[in-house]
Length: 406
View 1 (tube, helix red, strand yellow):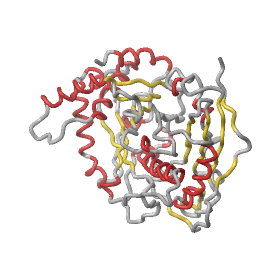
View 2 (cartoon, rainbow, N blue to C red):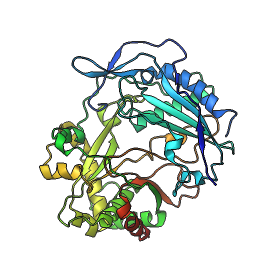
View 3 (cartoon, rainbow, N blue to C red):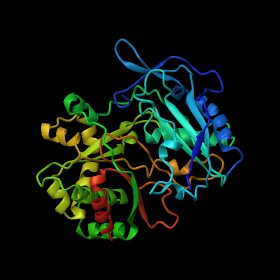
């Protein structure tokens, strides 16, 4: 049976429900369901109310003589209601192999997001079972994933008829320091910028038994000055890093860096409701041979050490990177991780309860994994991961390496 999604056309814009302040907000370098009746219409109305509080999202990116900024124009965000001719169970709640393309469930930018494009686009697809999928596409200059989660939580509160968001949103905070970004060092050498690669979309679970075993081994082997045990993220990151490195079989001495995103809002003194970009990209450097042949607990130690360096690295400014490291960062050997586990996306409630599943879908220029996704399983049999990190040539070996994790 063929499963299809029918989208409403043409694209409509949702504007704030009340007059909002105009003006411009500078962009920092860091920026550069209980089911309910008619979920799409309920969310559309609630979106209009939420935009009163998050009014910069209803604006546009503008470019002045000297810099780019957010123009608070109130032009609105894009909204598309859609219907599917199947149940969510028919499409296995979007587990792989995908029975319906994720692109059918979301609105996509036609190319690079330009000055006239909405900063956020939302599609709500209703399924015949009464369930629905809410897909959000957004320009990263307006918010990171944590900021988006704050916005969606507020949207859910509007859908549940709360008078205002429980967390007061903050977007313009000129007291925050600049966050040094890895991409700034790479962009100094434009000839190294990555090109789009067709990575295979897959999802899998790192077994709980494996995670617990590595945690216990780390506990037995950790140094006396280690105040904290290792985390699930650190174990999962190390496992994916090793499995992928083994699968792609790079030269033994070639660099195989790991890059992971860290929410540094507390470290930079951001207010609770700050929804702009507050992410620092941390690097872990090692060769392919060290990653492929090392013990998992040793890779966990490398990742933990890198996490502990973040406060110092934040104040050090944009780091200098060797030509070899920049080449590796723009090549196939690098692996990027973005954990959505603690963002609050699993707490978003539009009136029908918490989501059954949260999954990402992005167009990539570098291998990327989303470990420790929320709402992965009911019985906590492990850490759910969505990965777009290997090409078709290496996907079978990658899955074979993952299958050895016990």
